[in-house]
Length: 124
View 1 (cartoon, rainbow, N blue to C red):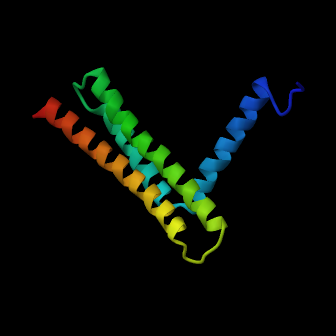
View 2: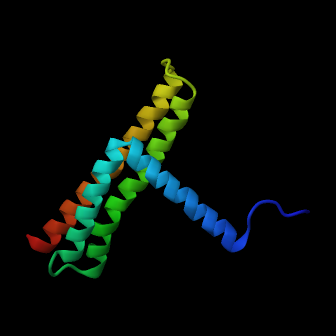
View 3: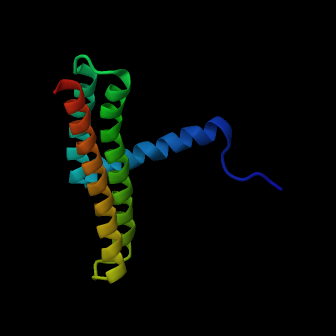
């Protein structure tokens, strides 16, 4: 069987390039991504700077916002694919976009709950 495509370091370099293109596209085209990324940087910095937190709690506070970003990127990808096929309303397209949005909402709520639980556990 003949090899096709890029392998090894070249594949990793191209994967990194495509990932950066994805980040730039999300920043350029998605207001929610920009807002959540700014909030993620602030929360990550806060997680690092909060005093007297156990390492695991600090790690969780820092990681959960990045999981929101992951789900937001997936939601944006779903929306882009759906929009590629046209602007006319379609029940399945609407359902796909709504489900992607619901996934972001769930991750936001999990992140909020985690922050509340960890902060209450450590400071109250």
